Amino acid sequence: MRAPSRLVAVTILAILSALVGCQGPPSAAAPGALGSGVPPLGAAGLFGDAPALRSALVAAPADEAQGDPDVNRGLDAILDGCDVRADVGIVNECTDDQLRTLVEQITLRPAPERVRTLTAALGSPGPRQAAAAVVLAELYAQAAEPLLQALDAPAVEHLLAALEGQDTPQAVQLAPLTTHAALLAGEDTRLRAMVQNHPSQRAQFAAVRRWLVARRLTDFADVAPLSAAVDQARAQLAVEAVLAMIADAPLSDAERQTVCPWARPIATHPGQQVAALAGRLLVQGCVGEDADAAVAMLQDRLERGEFALPLSELAIALCRADGVSPSQALQARACDLVGRVAADRRVHAKLREQARAALVDLPAPAPPDALTP
Image (tube, rainbow, N blue to C red):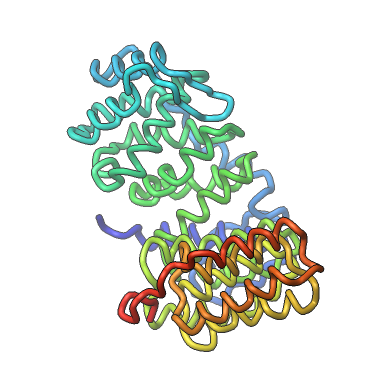
């Protein structure tokens, strides 16, 4: 698929700048700079009101009685045979794998009419909307490319209309797909309105994470300052967005030169969750001294008696190479640190117990060619 247009990139930049803007007045854009022609989002930034932009969202009709009969029968089967929890966005306890059956059916033939029927069901608040949102989220997770190719203009309209203003689990589930689809469709104005006005911070953040994955470092200069935000949630968002980028595709050498120097000081963030995420980023995306800084941060926090669950989990993950790929030398240092945690009485007893358990039956170190370069 072709990358979003320059107009979309300009709009993305404006939204991400607005996120940073809640820390203080935004700096004026230089003449001709990217984003200089985009109207400001207002002093309140992303979380302010923008009636003009909100009105740009046009509600799409949702007539689930029409459309593809197989999809409608599949949704009816889910409603009849599964426990559909709209309040938490869960479909489970199906009597005959009704959810999996519909997902597989659409995956095998993701025709526009089928997908459009599914997105139209998002206009039916309650169990039917919840079931459709779960199916769409599963399709996006399992077969994103065919799903996106099958989304026509009415289907994208359904997604945007269903997401706008909804502080629901379905909004969070749909935010990544809607962001991706809207970027590809050039629906930047509607997406911008949704992100700016959305009442769910989780949905907003999910949209921004998907945005950064789609655009890589194109808009990184506007995401990076979030790491210094007083609001810890925004600082965490910046790191999580880059981790999502790395999960999507490893950092290139050029990207590493930008990301790793930015991430190192975040490892000293007073919030241990933010610091632990930054440490994981340094190990997963960086090399040499940048990666070493993750263990150095853990050692320093332990020496200062500031060692809670997020840091303990990172130390154990590095020691056991669980979800991360440290070098053998870095893994050895992490295991030594875990041993110190197990013996440090300043650390909570449960964390000491976890550390002792982590040192039992350690997996063999990965061969050098399997390690992060």
